[in-house]
Amino acid sequence: MKNNASSVSHAVNQESHDRESRDWQTHDREGLVQRTFFMVDRGPRPATRGWFHTAAAILMLAAASVLTTFSWMRLEWWQALGATVYGCGLIALFAVSALYHRIPWAKQKTVQAWRRADHAMIAVFIAATYTPFCLIVLPQAWWLLATVWGGAITSAVMKFFWLSRPRWVDVAIYVTLGWLIVPLVSQLWTNAGPAVVWLLLAGGVVYTVGAVAYGLKWPGRNARFYGYHEHFHTATIIAAIFHLVAVWIIVASA
Image (cartoon, rainbow, N blue to C red; front, side, top):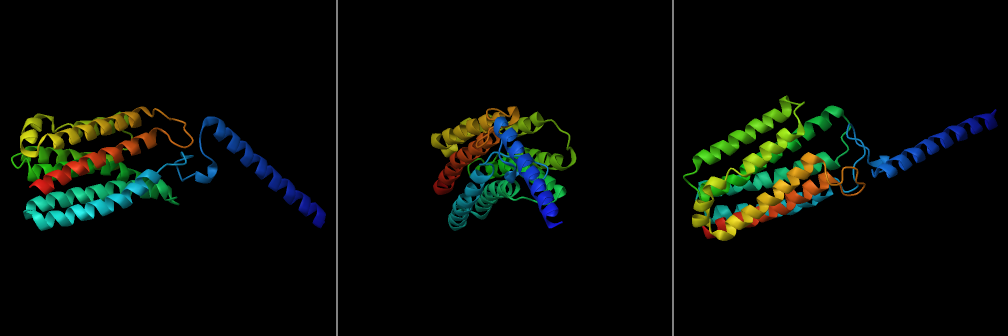
């Protein structure tokens, strides 16, 4: 009797092992990761998914803390407030992304809530980046500040209530909000200097390239380690660094 039970147990275990082996081989052929990185309602992910933003969240926390402290020591309160809004947005962008992409949330509703928060933070961060520039070097550009924050809030709300929207809608909103500064480039050049303009331009280009990669799901649609989403994440980090340096310049020069 024991031998029969042992044989049945061995057969079940062997079948389970064979099934897992077949699954792994299938994923390997498709360029996807092993099922050990399976997350609720997200399927297999590239092995590096979320790690770049996790590291960025830690580094940006330190950078934003120093920037904010320096701003309150040096600037007028409303200018320091603009730098603080930017710093909070910088931290939140990468922290929310890291939490969404790296934590294996157990419930599907929780996963969906974090996904919406992650996507909403992109537009909010764009508006947060505008804030110190509008309050420190473009004090007459209240219309721009109101427009980008209005667009960011609308986009964030849309993430939670228009769930069936096409991917290109998000990309179009991000790119449009990001390039609203163009009409004020000459004024920004005069008030902040060419270095700031070039840094903002470089960051804008990198953000746009990353957004296009995200929208097209290319290159690396089926990558095992570093896919199209990682291209997008890397682009956001590089662009954020360009813009962080630009913010430091206007804060230090004010």
